[in-house]
Image 1: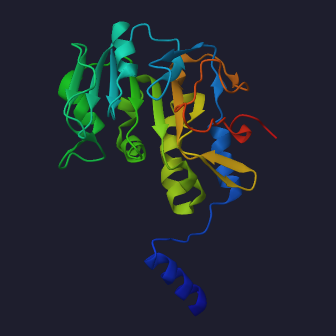
Image 2: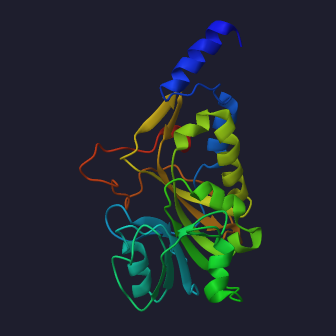
Image 3: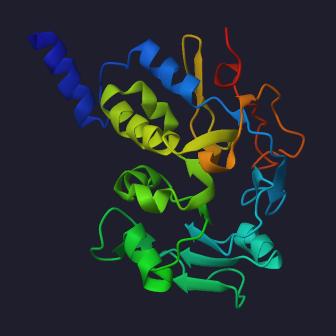
Length: 266
């Protein structure tokens, strides 16, 4: 790095900006291709409300007893709907004192989910062991923890991850896939999931906007639905977006559609 570049870099850093090389285009496109949604032969249904807090998941709930739902805030539509279907939920969020809906099917902890058990945090393994340590059946995960999802996934034991039949996770800061250092962390999280799961649905959060570089368009915040490969006999690429049950996350914001690079081959 010559002196002129070093001075410019230092000046931007003091103003709160950080410059980095961009991730190789082929690496970003390769990850997007691996995350392409698949039709796994199971109809998608909407669980939760008709806005933020509602997710499309496979109609494959029979036999599931429990849902884990870290990141509650002021919305509990998803777990409320599951409770109506006979599924109990464990909820965790240190930012609130109690969930917005109180039901006997809910068990709430005022704590954050993280990669360690220090302070106001608990690991996923410890959280599960606290209540159903010896439970070996299938479960559901619905997670929206504002960027903490990557470290939680990397920290989670493969055996625990594999117990989830269905996962609906909102991933944040996806524009950082263009940063090669962050790309390693994010792609490691996705690759860990993809060893045991298929992506079955994608839905961009229209409050986050889209980051664009060349022909690559990445929603900054996006809901991913995963189905465990144990439940799948065959797959074919899902090519119709949006799904008929999709709704904009926030009706008052500009509508957003899933960019074609996420579901169409060139």
